[in-house]
Figure: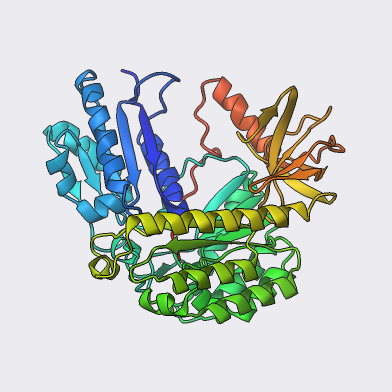
Length: 485
């Protein structure tokens, strides 16, 4: 009897992506494999998000499309996990009775058992825990990248932002011990990883659970001692918890990249107060000024919500003013949508949709123009790129590959006669700019072949021989724009 096959479909933030790698690792450890291209998986897992208004519609629409597929494939199972599952719980099975398993954010490790139980009992299994059962990083992983990895340092959030449902779905902040984090990073580097991104719903609040307010800065500095680790990033920090010791650690630790994604949400102090964001615009801009003083080359990106209840023209103008002053390398803009279970959903002064849309387009136009202007300043510079997988593009007869600069800008470059692999490093000269990427039409000068490129090549070789690519010979078994911090 052949092994059952699986597919994981992921929606939402980086923490969901990290969780999906763990779900894949769990299923492969239980004997499941990925289906051949074009074949229908025996198990389809939805790892859901509940941040956006259309998350519900998207899930139930996809479940509806799968019903006739399941009817045509006896024995097929459908599982729903993640934040929407934590929120809706048993309602998912009532609305889509062909779903076999529903599990929450706190018990992703239960998935293989729940699938088997549902198969044996021939009825749906719903298991939602109120508190974290196992920290995600203690579970097996099937990483999607051979050269870059997510490393969760905390889960949950202690803030009470009025627009955000995440704390009620992910729970209070739980921090991993620094030694466990560094042990996982060292194990990843041993597998060929050269870039890690530290994850947390409120990543720079790290240490609150064990009483060390400087724990995050110390952790950043400690990553600099991991031999072979070339790039460190983190997401997402909260401005209220952003301290000067973190800025110093970023500037003084060579492998911590000059990049900062720090959600603004609004430039209006009145709206920030209504959002329960415990900072004001001048504090936010002050952080940016200090980051740029310490790292002039830093690229700063952000999240902004347009149309929060009660937002006036004056409030929106204040947001535009902060955007002009901050000069973000990129801004992820969102139209406010009420989420059931959040305080803001009950506010009376909801902004008319047409006004929200108008403001959204105005903000998007401004932020893209600023991003384009900032990118143009880089024309003529030479930048070191970590070659990316699956981001190449063809412009006419010119085939370009893609890579990420230290500041995380996307660069499409001309490889010339070189043959870089994903995970290798090249140096490219920027010849032109667009709002969301840079271009190098000058052939790169050689390639620095890396252990990460070797790991990618080995993974491709394993895949071509029919061996599942797991990102290493054994799963990691050591003890997250966005979760909108």
